Image (cartoon, rainbow, N blue to C red; front, side, top):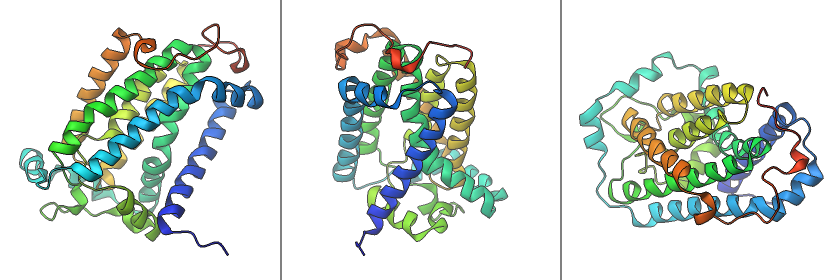
Length: 277
């Protein structure tokens, strides 16, 4: 039997679960999607935008891992908001913990990535703007990850918050500890990118906008319940979302991101635009 490290098992589990949920999303929200056409379009155009987003995200994580300041400012956040976040665990139980763990680990990458393709089905330019906003938001977070590192509430002794997500599975615990410094809580990109996706989802049909909004709210709540983020992390992330959104609406994405090499703004294989979906 092929031996797989715990970190690899964690990464594969999250990736496979996320792709499965996105597949379900495609059936529900993109019923006329042509899989062959989708793959061709991805290889021809989408990899450029998604590739830039992936490179930026990977680069930011690398920088945060290697160059963050030795002194953390968790104490300052605690002084500012106190133990309020602990209240979210007052209703803790196993079903809720499993639900919020799924939202945090699987719902998050699903809403962030699927929103791009759903937008593309309605308006290619909006998908480009969303990709630009994503990149801007992640880059805005870098200085804070490096110079103002903040630890997660669950690992701060002064606040009575348990790392509930670690208790779900030893694979999750080992995987998260191996892939995250746990001192880049401020600002919360889980909150920021989820809110950004929900914000742009309004341009992809009423039904999807409602679904994305509900999922984003679940993800944000999960960060508090699971002991991963402070309220301050989320609040400041929303401020950065406003900046990233403004940039994406006022700067042509073609000026800063690769331009897809196809004529027309909406690929035919995605089907006709239906704002009511």
